[in-house]
Image 1 (cartoon, rainbow, N blue to C red):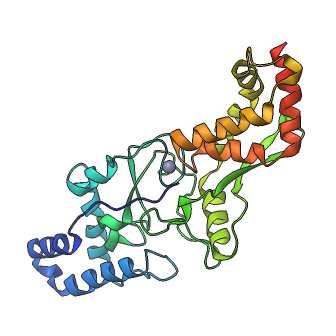
Image 2: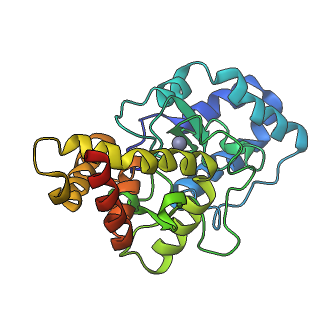
Image 3: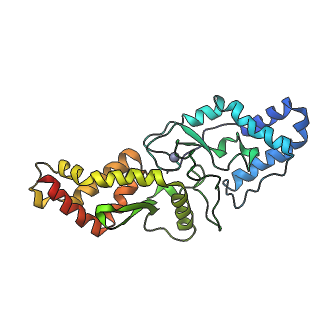
Length: 274
Ligand SMILES: [Zn+2]
């Protein structure tokens, strides 16, 4: 999760070009162009952008535009967007895919719209969120990397449910959020970061005592390891290398916020270091 600047692309000219090649679409050209303006003005917010009523055959043909163009042009450039560290949409540690912020099934008019196509990862395109693209109640919706600056600050954390020996860890909003921001982040992390995230952070958790013991080798006797300091260091390193809201960063943020978890890790790390 991170804000991104969209790549420069002349979408309105692209609409004109498509309509020029399909004379029967000229009657839809104005409506289509206008839909892009509405999207841009409202930041793609699904509570404000309503699907354009177009004939079914036109809607289907608009969806197919994505399939025929996905391997080249602006879509390829978006897929290969140059950023490092973690997925701008979900925070996983892979990239190399493209996601429709508003799905092309409901919104075929945005199937090739550059501002609706965001660089993402395979997890974002998996079945985790299914056909969901908006929350049950306003303002709940997904965070839009091009229009929302909210992920420029810490928004991802985890909740660790004891017993710590068999902890269940799930994604939650970081502390310090309120109002609409909190509702949007809660929906985003609660809907998008499911089983794959829990497995990832579960593995980090199980391996953490041994990792902390290895990090502290030579620094202190097993009983006096500064576990809190080590975790803070790991959080800072994750922020710097993978981003403020990557899965790893969110994991360490949540561990630090849980005094019981830190105490448990201190005991386990001392054991592992013996
Ligand atoms: Zn992702």
